[in-house]
Image 1 (cartoon, one colour):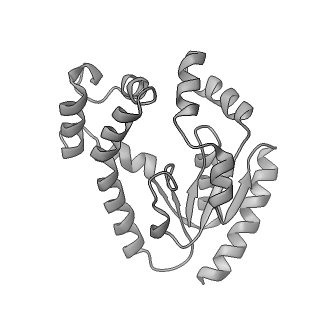
Image 2: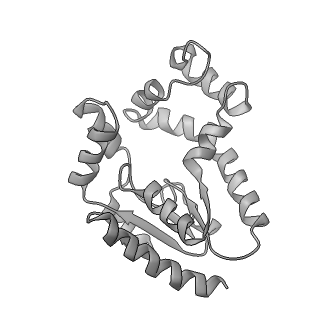
Length: 194
């Protein structure tokens, strides 16, 4: 199953809940960081396209600088996606091919935007209202309000993703309420995958 949502909607928390229930999981944010490590082909393409100004002193990518560039500019965001996405998709396909049994949940932030639904048999969106996303972002990141707005606007609205998803996990309540929804969905999907 493909799991998606928006920035600070709680995808990582929900993915961990599925893992704790026994599902195999794959985090595409982690994969995108791995494929863009210093010295790798994606890293070289990123530096070639964005310049050395996006690097830390040790030569690794400064994700905050890169983020402030791409969240403001759709064209630059597309360039970055072209450097990373083919490699991430390749890793997803490898994981799917090697998966033998049980439920596999793949956290794919741009599942619908990048039209990757064909990689999975079901989709679920982790939903939280924009106001909650904004509050979580403020707590999690040390970003100015303007930067938070750019990041939230750079993604599809969760209302649109809700319409496309097979399942919706409402993560606007307590962790216990979210856990209950995840447990029910896990049971439903696990029976289908068994």
